[in-house]
Image 1 (tube, protein in one colour):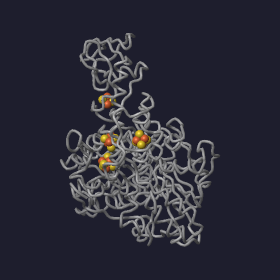
Image 2 (cartoon, protein in one colour):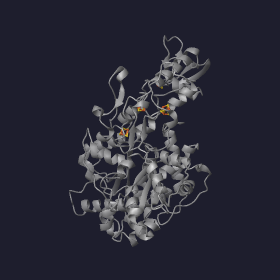
Image 3 (spheres, helix red, strand yellow):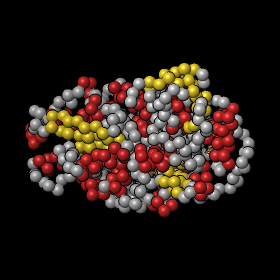
Image 4 (tube, protein in one colour):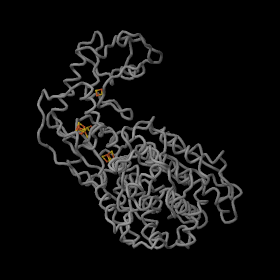
Length: 599
Ligand code: SF4
Ligand code: SF4
Ligand code: SF4
Ligand code: FES
């Protein structure tokens, strides 16, 4: 059924599409309704009742977020009864909530705190817990769970089950004993959590937060013997302004470089440099696989090749589709390539002892914390990346140093890893790795630029869950004659629920002719990563992606293979070229088959 329905909201007549919820209708007409369990990325739960309104003719107050308008209604959103009910609900939530706002990671960005302020709940009518009931789960290198601050909104549960289709979290027990837990209430590190941090991004309180290494980083900065090097990924740069009150959609790359130097980092490098290196390694690996399959008729070659730069996706496949791990590119993520190169090539070139170097990675991601702690990530002879830091944690350090980021003058990255191509930059949005790989692979194979206007490979872009497209390889260079006439097919997906769709298609044999698959674990790709500023929504992620694409078009170099610093490292250090012996040792890795229920 379509059409519109006329309703009265606070005695004002408005027309809304049939089926619109009262909450949506009010928002559309600038009437604010408080919410807590509602989130724009998630299905409706109707669990908290904070959004109650008065609907004429109904015996009880109704939840605006879950009430679809299908007939004319008279709605009142701020009667004495409505206000009293909301106040009671907030008061009750606070009565079960243990936590001191001033020492909480979400202080000043907590929806419960904001509601208490909005409704003037400044005393506890129903009492207040004065000691913690739950032990804080600090087992995971990525996500800390403090259920003493949980308000049972189940946003994390819906995120983990519906949005990500991982299913680690669930409401356990009934009545007063209800709590959010894992399989058999095990520690998070012992279950199949992929560390994506999407539950953190949607938790309204401080019940979930990332495992913050900033105290250790401060200690390294303050230690004169340590040479502390930071790499920054593009997505945090496109989002960190939000932590300083800026509207989403503006990158603060140059300002951040200055702030990081003022904080005390010895060198500030661009992760996009190793994104370019990843394209060289991963692209070469793909061409090698294609040659082995087409020319050598090697049936053991696994195609399609999967991207491997999203550690949440890597852990997802290790748990849920372990029989497919050989499809993953062996190329490490840009973060890990950077660490390995810093503690070898950079140490050699700069004359700093590798053991004195501390490598920090500013990432949009909580899974990167798990990744840098994987036992195999020490090919430099040291821990390649010492600390993974999220955008939120970096903003906290910047504030602690007394710096207001937007006021900083712009400066460039340090050399030798200070220049990168636009291809490396667009890794931050879903489809970006595929677009970067195609720009390079197509040109290496045919000697010509990809046939897309201004290098914009539109089929890779946008937030459609699963995208499929192809590009025909014609007039190939002699070395790549075996690819002549091949319709190169690729698939791009973001969010592990969409990854599951792709994997099930693959299992059914529907993607047998596909050559390359890009998957990012987080909705929207890294711009929507689990370490990015809170809140998140598709509108916010779209603005961040726009900032990245705009910045990339302003760069002089937009293809990874044209980055002169990448060519320099292959001339000076990785002299056998991409996928050569030393590259294999430092820049490639292997994966682990894991359990489907526990880690
Ligand atoms: S979760 Fe919110 S209300 Fe609770 S202590 Fe933290 S800031 Fe305060
Ligand atoms: S980090 Fe991701 S996988 Fe782990 S509990 Fe949260 S949403 Fe689920
Ligand atoms: S942990 Fe956070 S998101 Fe999950 S139910 Fe509790 S308050 Fe809601
Ligand atoms: S926001 Fe409507 S019931 Fe929670």
